[in-house]
Image: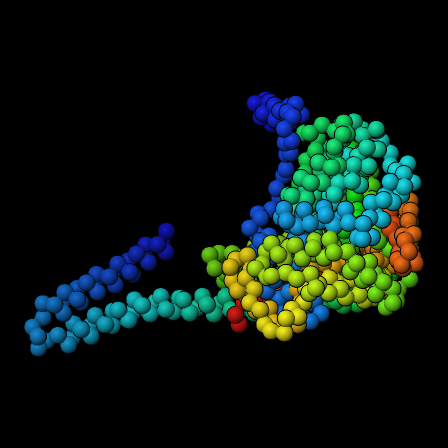
Length: 188
Length: 387
């Protein structure tokens, strides 16, 4: 509420000053118009400068957020292509690396993405967040079973299920492909 | 569902069953404008002399009434050996397999074709489940109409129990929606899914397609797969496979019909070329392409009225098919998470036809060698990681 009042007061004052400045320019004698003209132009620059600065800051914030997400996706790609998730990995008890999503979370919490301009990207990232959460939870369950109750045979079955064609991991890979392809098409 | 809605559905079912008019209730799963846009986009590919640029992907080859009629003509052509032998031998092969299908099954058929094979399957399933639901799925509503009429003609299946679905089943998102639809309709009752007529071989990513389709199968369901096979792989046999298709004029007319109906090209059947190759250790691959051999560039109009160049020697891939190595079939099936319950093979005993070419009909159940179906701990692993 306070923010709305301050904004209203600021822009109200600027608008009134602008109106007065223009009126002053109109009623001034021809030889005395320099001062009201300078005053009006200064006020106009002040008003437009506020919006220009806001626009530039938002744009910079969005570019930083998308750059961070690109880097994070590349890290996740390395993780998924790495040894623990590779087809040639030998079965056995192990801790798996997790997929990360901090840049995505940060982009959402900072409001760097515009719901109007980035609707498709936001939808894609929401799906990605959900998939990462799910795969990390499944990895926790797998590790818990592997290190507590699973026999050597079941460890092998868990390994096979994780690497199978119908594994949840394959869906996550496809979603990562889609997300990286979308990010790759955005102008840098 | 409210009482009035239930009454509406009941009245509709009654009207379809009691009318002499050939009503068919079709569920359309996709916006057809998107499909036309995709077809147009596929025809905008880069120039290629090998059929790897512009293309008409599987499904679009049968899309529309013109290609559907051309397909029906090709199937009746005695020179189109693959189809003729496939149809002729299906009765015998199905009779060897059907004993393993229990009672109470519904039938979901991907790529309905001419409907002859579905008719035989339905005839057997109806003996054990007179109230079965028959759900043919195809991208072409015209193929659905043609196929379902043949499939149900003379059988005691009631009209409202036939639910054709117009859908591109090569798209995973479509399959996810379709799975929900089927499971809502049949509940826990078993379903026999089928992919017959070597349809699987028509897709670029055939293994992924099969894995997607078998992803619908629950433990109580079965999957019937028919593929063209070869005993060996060699460049010479690939040329023999090409010969099989190249002999039939009706087949060339079918292969070019989608191009004729969706572009303004003046089609000459002499421009249809067949390219055979060995695809790794798994199949003989045959690409049917339309090649500009006029010696000059042609401008071609697409369905959205854009005009694109079709340069000299450029190709448009019209059709893709394969003959799978019989030794590779277990691997193909296993990779799709399935195991073979029973399989039959039928050779093509035709003079001049290459030795070892034939059709295999496989009845599959979920759970491949990688994932034993009966293991409790294996089931726990699947529960965690199944997509």
